[in-house]
Length: 387
Image 1 (cartoon, rainbow, N blue to C red):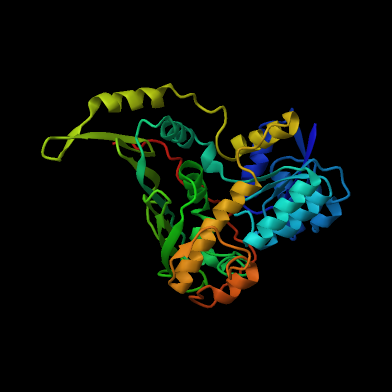
Image 2 (cartoon, rainbow, N blue to C red; image 1 turned 180 degrees about the vertical axis):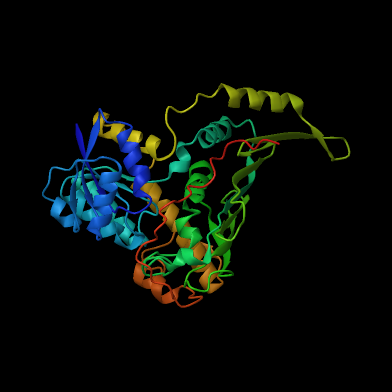
C-alpha cells in the first residue's frame, strides 16, 4: 500500500484527493499539510481521512511517504519538491511546475540524483478528446500541419485576484498564460513540438487589482515554417476552449471537428468525403480511457511507481511548457521576437529576472486569506459540441 501526502489543502487539492480515493486498494492518504492547519483538518474531515495534519510540510520529511501531491501556490513548488525528492519520495506537482526555469532545473536535478519520479499535472492530456486527437495527428491522415490554434478561454471575476497569493508576479508567477493556458500549451507541445520563435502581446483589461496579465496573444513560428497562435484569457465569457490543427489534407480539433477539402480545377475547395470518412472511422475506433483528468494522471503515476514504467508527463515536459510560457512573457514584456530555447543567462530564466523584467499592470490590492466558497471550475471537457 503506497502512502500519500497532500501538501496544500486549497480547492485544487480535492481533485487530487478524489483521484487517490479512486484507488483505495493501491494507496492511502496518510498526511495533509497546509499553512492553515484548520483548512487541512477540514479537508480531512470532508473526505473521512484518518490523516496526520501538520502546518509545516517539513514535519513529514522524516515520515515514510511514497508519493506527495504538491497543491500549493507556484512560488513554493520548487523547495517542497526538492525537499521531498531528497527525502526519497516521488512527487506529483500541480501546474505550473514552478515559478521559473531555474526552479524546474533544480527539481529535475533532484529527481535524477534521487532516482524518484517527478510528474507535473496536465490533466487535459488524460481526456478522451485529447488522446484521440493526438492519435489522429500521429496517423498523418490530416497531412503536414501548417497552422495550430489554441484558445484557452476562461472567465474570472474581479475578486478572483483578491486571494492573498494571486495576482502577483512574485507569488502566482503570472496570469492566465501561466496558470490557465498551461494545460493547453502542454498539449500543444505534446502534439506539435517546440516552436523556434515567439512574438506576443499581453494586457490587463479587466482586473485592476492584479499586477499580472489577464489576456495574452502569442504568435508562434515552427522550424518547418508553419505557424501557430495561442490566446490565454480570463476575460472570455463562456470559457470556450479548443485546439485546432490545420493540415494540408484536413482540419481536426478538440472538441472534435473534422473537415477535409480537395481542390477544384479553379483552386476553390471541395469536400473530401472519402478522407473524412477514413479519419472519422479511425477516431471512432480509438478506445476510451478507463479514467480521465486528475484521476487518470494519478493512475499513471501509481502505475509507474508499481511497475517502473515511465510517466506520460515528466519533469522535462513540465519544464518545456514553462519555457514556452516564459518566452511569451519575455516577448510581451520587451516587444522582442524571442528565439527558443531560452538559455540560463536569459533574464526570464530565474524568478528574480522575471520579477525585474515583467510588465506590472496594476498594484495588488485585495488580500483575502480564503474564500468562503471553495467551488472551482476545471475548464472545458473538450467533448464534441452538440448543435
